[in-house]
Amino acid sequence: MALSEQFIEDDIHPIDIVEHLAEHHEWDFDRISDEQIAMAVEGQWRTYSLTLAWSAFDQTLRLICTFDMEPPEDKHADLYELLNHVNDQCWAGAFTYWDEQKLMVYRYGLVLAGGHVASADQIDTMIGAAVMSAERYYPAMQLLAWGNQTPAEALQVAIAEAYGRA
Image (cartoon, rainbow, N blue to C red; front, side):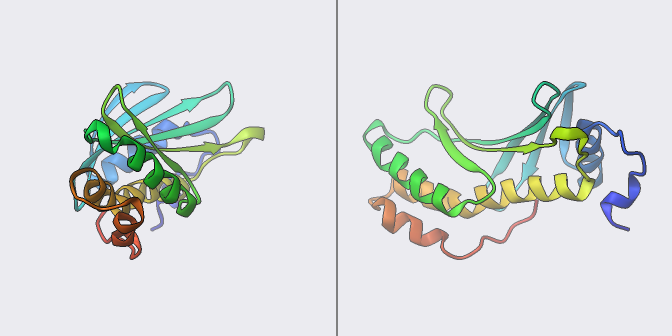
């Protein structure tokens, strides 16, 4: 049975769907509020922290996928150049680095304006794409931060799709 077949009501709150998906995949999660949920999703390279939040104001389901990263200060300019190249390859989200928190962040917003409702399959795909992107580009970010790789050289490791589980 498809994940979407488990939901027959049209007015299910997106965070309720995310909570159901977290239970289905057996991810650790914490329902922070009616509008927000935080999860830990294990990948091949590391465990990623995901937060999904619903904004009724702009009718957007926001996803933030983070992992710790503390590159040396002298690598920041190269890291930002790498992120520009990475984001050119990401069609459904973007990476940014939050220096103050020492976090690499993948962000995506699913706009559901006009009364549209997200399906469980759609949200599951959104979460899977975030983890897959983090898995795919994590080695390049590490090579750049801790190796003697240029942004172009580090990106070569991410050319092939990463295989993990989300």
